Length: 376
Image 1 (cartoon, helix red, strand yellow):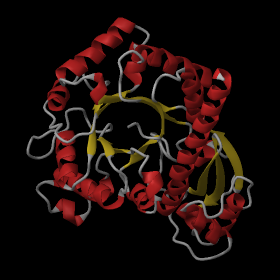
Image 2 (cartoon, one colour; image 1 turned 180 degrees about the vertical axis):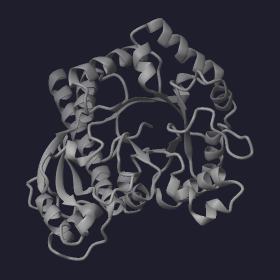
Image 3 (tube, one colour; image 1 turned 180 degrees about the horizontal axis):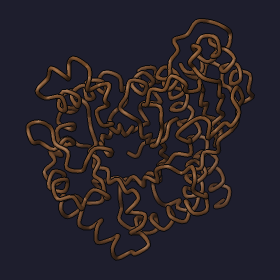
């Protein structure tokens, strides 16, 4: 069965904390893709890694343990797109194969992700062909930039898709497809829609379990979303507008909505910046309502109640809707909350995941009603 929502989440503490506070009913219809970041310099400096002979495998085991501990849904997808395609752990085993095995060892049902863009790398291709797929609910074929380019030449596109399926001895019915459009901030919606439509037209005849579209309209830094300090602005979520248009046009395809949560693939959040601005990214109907504060150099506690109040007093605010919403309300009322970039990413993500599930469900209800009225 296809999920309702496929978010691409960073395998970091903030996303794990948001996962921990998810409503079980929402978690049950989400298939998150945890994209494992490369090991950060700060993490490499930690004593446990400096004293280890196997820091890469230790790190991937830590990721698997965190996902197993915090994700309450039925299954996860796992990838490491930002690692080198031929990345291995200390034993020589491919990093992704090791990650999948570690997740299974933790009792996680994992759907492996295989990258179209990485298929040209010989070691990557061999590793994916050798994956242990026993117990895997399906395999997700992740189509990114080069796939979008290849779609302009159907023969090239179909040859690569067929090669991947044959090499891994998979039928389309055993696979899902993720059309990952990445950073959408500078791309006109008409061009995004044209690219996605062309790809879907080529994919529609295969019979995949489902096809998901994903992208992110959230800029990598808050000053690109809200120009003035201590103010608010809206960022249109092109990824939702795209999915709704495609869902209407390609009604015969099980088309799933996907995105990058509240921080896009080029987010600066992982970089420690003592002068970064405080912010809340609040997901609402086809947009983000972004409340920007000012530099955190003077501390969080004094400014966050005002930043939170901008959201809590907005017509889009949903009191009590999620754990994140409750924290925003508490903060706006001057109650003590835990602050920090990671904490506010967790609060924002908590609201986002819950909101998107309901947003997609509502659109599906409206679409079904309109279809029924048309055929009546």
